[in-house]
Each structure stands twice: as C-alpha cells, then as structure tokens.
Amino acid sequence: MAAALASPRCCCRRPSPRPGGSGRRPVARCALPPGPEKRNSFSWKECAISIALSAGLVTGTPTLAWSAHASPLEPVIPDVSVLISGPPIKDPGALLRYALPIDNKAVREVQKPLEDITDSLKIAGVRALDSVERNARLASRALSNGRSLILAGLAESKRANGEGLLDKLAVGLDELQRIVEDRNRDAVAPKQKELLQYVGTVEEDMVDGFPFEVPEEYSSMPLLKGRATVDMKVKIKDNPNLEDCVFRIVLDGYSAPVTAGNFLDLVERKFYDGMEIQRADGFVVQTGDPEGPAEGFIDPSTGKVRTVPLEIMVDGDKAPVYGETLEELGRYKAQTKLPFNAFGTMAMAREEFDDNSASSQVFWLLKESELTPSNANILDGRYTVFGYVTENEDYLADLKVGDVIESIQVVSGVDNLANPSYKIVG
Image: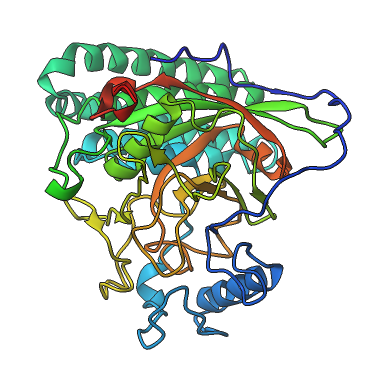
C-alpha cells in the first residue's frame, strides 16, 4: 500500500518560471463528443450548445435537440418534470453517502439535518445560528430515537466500531449545541464536517460484503470492491498564486467496481505519476493519455490496450448496467447513482461512438449543476462516474495544460482491490 501524504493542502507560492516550448502532443480522446473542426478537443461552441440545451431543460422548453451519441433517431430529451424535482445535491460527501448500498431510514434522519446546516450558514446574521440550532436538535433527537435501529443495521463484524462512532457522534452533537450557544459561527462548519464524517463511516459500516457479482466477462479484471481514497499532487506551472496542490479523491467501487478498480490499479502502477494535464478548457480537466501512439494503458501481460466497459449504476438497481448508455437502453427517467452534480466529478473519457473504449484517460467536470441538472444533461448515463474530489476541488479550475501530476498515492482502501494486475510480474 502506498503511503498517504501528510496532509492534503494547497500552497500559495509563486512558481518558478516555465521553460519555453511545451513539446506536448494533442489529446487523442475527449471526454465529450468532438466538434467538426478538431475531433480531439471540446470547443467552446459545444460548451455553449450544452449550456443552451441544459438551460432549455431547466425551463422545460428545450432550445436544441443535440445528441451526444451516434443514434440520432433516438429521443434525447428526458421527462424533465420527473427528473427535476428539487435542487440537486452538489456536495461530494453527501453524494457519496447517498450512493452507499444501504437502506436505513434512522441513520438518514440523522444525516439530513446535519447536511442542512450548510444551507443554514448561508443565512445572514444571527438567524443562521438559530437555523443551525434547529438542525442540531433534529439530528440529536433522531440519533437518540433511532440509535437501536442504526445499531441493528450495522454489519456484525463492524458493530463495535459503529457503536463507538455513535458515541462520538452524540458527544459531538452536544458540542455543536454549545458552539451555537456561544454564538461561534466560525466553529460550526468544522464541527459539521466532523459529525458528517462519523455518520458516513457508520453508514459504510452497514455494508456487509460486496453487494453484487460483477459479470463474468469482467470478473478477472482489477475490481474495487468497496471504496478507496487517493491523494493527487499536482505541480502548478503558470499560476502566480498557486504552485502545487493536493486533491483528495474518493473512488466508489460500490457503483463502478470495474472502472474504479482499473484506475486504482493504474495508480499503484504509478501510471499517472509525472503525467501532464492534457486538457483544461474551463469545462473539464483531463489527463491519462500516455506517450506514444496508444491512447490508453498497454497491459504488459498482453501487449494490448486494456479497456473497460461503460459502467452505470442506476438508483434503485442492484448492480450497474454495462456496455450501453441509459439513452441507448431507453431508460430516460433513470437516475444515476453517481450524478455529474459536484464540482470535480470524476469520470472516464472514451471514444465518442464506442461505449466500451475507456482505458486510462480520466476527466473532472468543472460546472455549476444548475446549468446541467442531474439526469437532464449530456453526461449523466453516458459516461462512467466513479468518484469525486472531496478536498481542494475548487482549485481544479486553476489547473492548466502542462501542469504535472507529481504523484497519486493511496490513502486507504487498497485492500478492497481484487485481481490487482500491478502485482503480476511483467
């Protein structure tokens, strides 16, 4: 297991001058459908089209019918009245908590008011703390009333750990109440983050084993049967205010075991270490195209590019669907378990007309979800999401083509990687 970095942080220092000449070649694969002039880059015209489409969807009056797929005869506009029922969840931590394969109403009743504190803190003046106090009371009451049901939902092997976390959560809620009584607004958000970490870990302790079988054709590939956390350290070259930054990323194998396993296996091979950011256009940040003619990772055991299938987990399904987009399957109202909601949503790039062509190229989305709402945009159900940047995600917008990934190191979860190919000699 690779050693974790000491602490994920961004350093605001003026970088050294960048030497002249980049010597970079164009990126061979795009995260989104390429434009007619250059198939290997996403144009701002297309970005404008996607925003226009999304804006039309938000208002219920689509302005364009622009398909992201090779099947122009299939409908591309979902039933918006069903899909857009409220403001989207944008917090990556909350998205990951809700994506866990659990069904325990009692713990969700603790989680929800704690998450609502984020909106409470948007209120001006002392009214914010009054709202925080109400949410803290709701969470505390839910924990007291539902503790036995939460404990009953824990996996037997993890019950002792979960019980200790619930004790810490109860103490932390009392501390939050005192923070509010002291009118210490600045201390609320850090305490909220701590409490939600307890809740998230308790929820993870409710998952007993891996919940489904991966199809046989993919079962021998590297599979992440659970979750893993990695730190990606990037050297920033041309930003006078930022020199390097560490991004913490949580990979979700419960929703995309093949894709997340493939990525974690490449991380352990040090595949991305020393690689440049190859695309940064304000819409996505992308990397993963290796030097040479290949557009993906060449497995030394086969001498061929290793590809992974399109892998989409739908909310309510027991296992992901493979090899076809939700549009191609006719599932226009389906909600993806990991939506493109959060700034820094991490997904696989692939060829425009080949659903199963992903290999090593990954991208992080930079957007506001109001412009491209969940399951009513050009991405959800068409590209495999397998994680989120959970710390320092705002700094993704500062990355430029040519910035270098110094390293990606595993923080936790490598034990959840099955069939690790990096351990095979050659």
